[in-house]
Length: 198
Image (tube, rainbow, N blue to C red):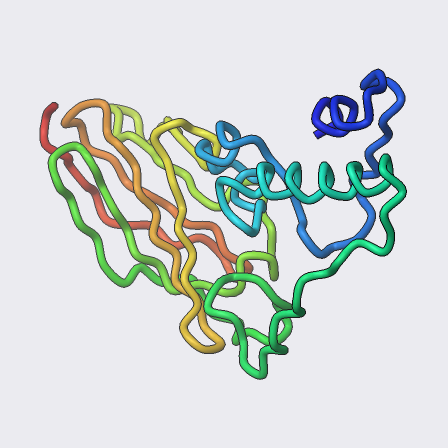
């Protein structure tokens, strides 16, 4: 973003200052590669994989207008005001119905295990990790993966004032595992699961 503005104005990138935390309109702004990882920042990039490219286009247009002295810059039409809740996990967690976490369904396709969980708003309670994957060993259960593991994804869906999370994990072998989901009111676990061998 700084490089694009600097190139447009014909100045050093050191002369371009970006104030990142101006307001809550856009939340995070990541590169396409960060967005694809879908960790916290990528998942909080609200307008998708190409949001950075859209920002670069907007700020270079503003920079061109500043350089040439054209003013005022034309603004786009404002989007219509929404009267209903958006169909995604954004918005106030206090407008959502608190829920006990509960496993709704479990699916295994090859090495991939998917678990649907009824849950509260994802921002109503933010634990150190939403997901735990444990492997059964001779002396009990051993943690082998969580939210930050490359093979784990969480997809949130809003249903009115309620939420559902789908946890997907790629098992590395056909040993026995269980998946836990941490919510405000405790942790819910699947029963023992065995994925097919790769």
